Image (cartoon, rainbow, N blue to C red; front, side, top):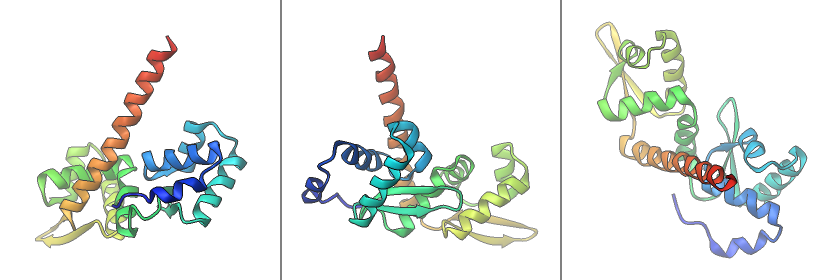
Length: 179
């Protein structure tokens, strides 16, 4: 993750474009529907400005298989975006958290901790493996999964948690201000 180039911000002369860009910077990995809900722009307006920002290299687009997600350009490389995409999915995030704290775990152990069926946990683990976030090793009759780069994943997890916490606090203050 790097700092954004402050010389690029003059390109954001339009208030709406600047608001979209700043929201993407504050919420790396936000998906299109999230932007629509949070910013309340018309769908076409949002699409236009996101394409404009992408074309000029100010935002990067990442497809996680379900959502199109937006990142501030040059702050997250492709591997980081894969981690952040996974962290935006609840059960993948919970699996990553367990692996970060407890180390290698089997599908059965994760299933028990998450109170989800082994097939559900297995599906999420396969997605995490496809994204190169976890490795697996056969241990007798079971397979143990662990994070490929625990330090990097933990760092990006804190980035994700910070953006989530910031949104909750902002919404609480907005609610407070409305009274």
